[in-house]
Image 1 (cartoon, rainbow, N blue to C red):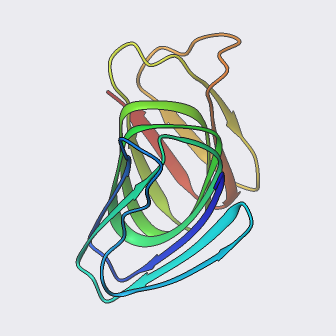
Image 2 (tube, rainbow, N blue to C red):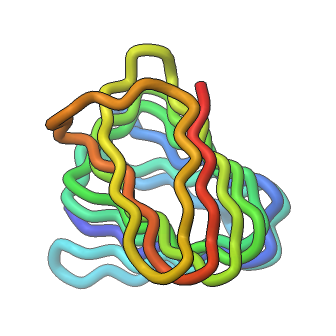
Length: 155
């Protein structure tokens, strides 16, 4: 599988990591559907959600609300984070472009030292406060979409 659609409701902390093999790891309280190259994963009622997917993905779409999100040991062509409320996103050994989509939300993105990326701000009344150096022409693009939202990027 290369595409993952993950919806996590009411979790305080979410960790998505790359597995060592071609396996998918999900909590026991999950609705899981697969169709060809796509997996739909719905998780609700778990305070700390741990999700493992193969370390190389094409597209990951994630819905979360008011949570801490840890991304570890994974690469993707593109990840879309549809968030609500306040998000804290931490990257560790991650490679790929990330779109953060929010309406009236705030997000804090914590990047590791030496992470090469560029930013793009789309939508209406959105602000990106980048407190680390950008890399002109980097293949990893952090994009903020939506309306009336703020993204702070720090290391």
